[in-house]
Length: 237
Image (cartoon, rainbow, N blue to C red):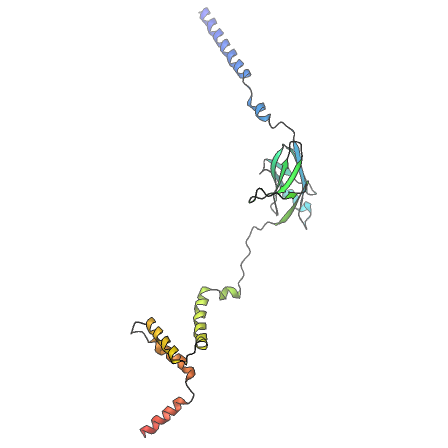
């Protein structure tokens, strides 16, 4: 029994040594992954400006975001900022404020520490518009969280489809007799024929008669009806 117990103890000791040797022999992933980024680090600095406002009125609620929040910076009381410990590369710098709106700027950092600032253009990415460095990020205005209330005007009333449907036929009826020569018998006959074609149902009132009466009112001479009534009265006598 003692011999068997010694063998088991030796087995456990050898197994423990083997596990420890494997743990120390394997490379740790942390240092190897961080080795490419262990180069020189730089800082991005600049100033945020809001025309017409003092920096103390809004800097407390503003933040500087580098590459969407990968690095975060704060603004000083004079509006200046500096974000440290940034490796070489290309980064988008944004100033986030609940009160004012700022345009983002891209900063390119070379391995030697040279800085180049340019405007961010998401449509024409190849277009480069240089900006001064250190950054001078000027606000483009306050945020508009609410839509402006629409006001009523006469143009809204006149351009209403229901109003146009009522006004346009009236204008046609008033202006058509002045544009078309209604005293011409041929023109009147053509109009009557076209109206008859539009009114094929005999039960409905005749549109041609209505148009004839409408256009013949202006051409009838005054006093003609009184003469006809006098002649009719003399014949009766």
